[in-house]
Image (cartoon, chains in turn brown, green):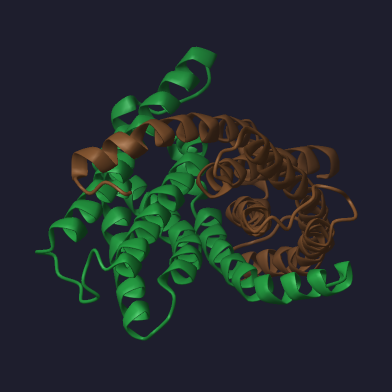
Length: 184
Length: 192
């Protein structure tokens, strides 16, 4: 039963928000380390929010589908499970379709509003590689989180979603950092 | 259903929502890409970006979910009324949460950078930006969430499925744009 006074809502949410903020500051620290490169190549800066957001979204969709399947008793946590394998394939396919477009759009928009220092191929490559790695990671994180919640008997709707979204946010920044450091 | 069918169905269902949030994220990215000057002038601001964006998503996503559940349960009327005790408490608590956590992020971020001996702006500058951005984005996102959830419900749409995508698409854009505006205001006032 949801509680409905300002004091109660704050008491319920603030502790969780404080912990999540500390986790997100960790990924902020990675961005801060990368600041010089990002300011030098603004088309990579354009990629930051969309990479974080898409990773979180892919994880959230996968996790909420797995949670629902768990509630309905339809999930077996085996690689041959239809819900598990089907959604994993869909997540990777979504990333494979959308991230190249995101990279090309980021480059195109940046070349209209400012100047781009990187060739379009590099930006598309960075976005696509990030997207592929993040799709696989978001599958792993959402399956693991749902499995743990299922085993300890917690309601996956309550716990899994915030854990998966914020973990994928952080992974988004880490993967972007690794790809930029290795290839740009 | 075979794995192939499940995959196709999941792909088709998720594509519009994910594509829409990609567009929102790109807009946010363009604003961030145009912030080079402010990011360089306020060292430590980039550190706050993930925390501030996540706070917007967590706080106002939860406001949307709370209002949606209350509408379903008949706890609040489908006509927005700020005199309603529950609606007012939910909105006030969301804005308070958003502002408090933004200021906490600025303080903790400042402490982190100081401890690591990295370049950082003054605590007053970072706090000022977090306070202004937290308040303004809170008001804007509350309006977006309330309008979509109440209008959607009255038109017969499920507010549970509406609130999420609205917050993920508008949250990033509003979050970054208000941060840029706040950074400019604080820089004009002499911060740095």
